[in-house]
Image (tube, rainbow, N blue to C red; front, side, top):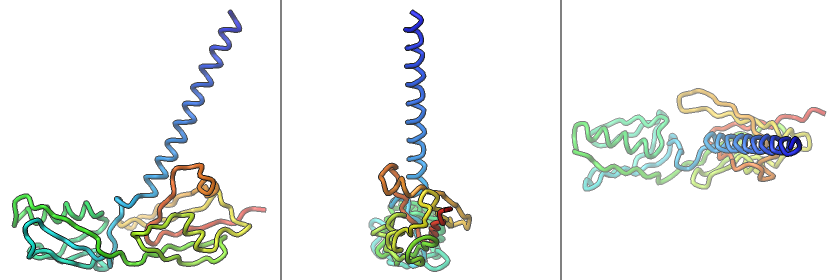
Length: 206
């Protein structure tokens, strides 16, 4: 009876530990995905070329390029500030501006016709540190950027690569990423990059 009780306790403890470990792993994967971002979360950038259409109002269709101040100019509503906006958020903002004074429930569509080349910086222990260019529609992951920068040197500390990202409001976020897990496929996150991200590969302590 005593042995049976001990076996049961050991089984329950083991199951609890396994569930906790699995939950922790899932949380890390979800965090990586959300911070990495996705195509639907792309924030519109200066020099992106947009096509703005209003259903059944063809004369108001415009192709406009976002200024360095993150603004565009449209008929009737004039200057629209798209700072920090995704495509979906831009559609909603423009819809609300037209609905306020000009139309009843306008249906607005915003499409990105052209993404200008983006740049990220890869520094530290890579073979050719510097700027890496990419087109937004093609995307670029963290590992791809390091590969384009010549790959890791033999002194690279792959488990503690840092990624610095400046948000549209000017705040900076810093992430520490284990690239060994990424290259082995041990995580679901691929860390898609955003324009002007800075990757720093530290030197391994001998």
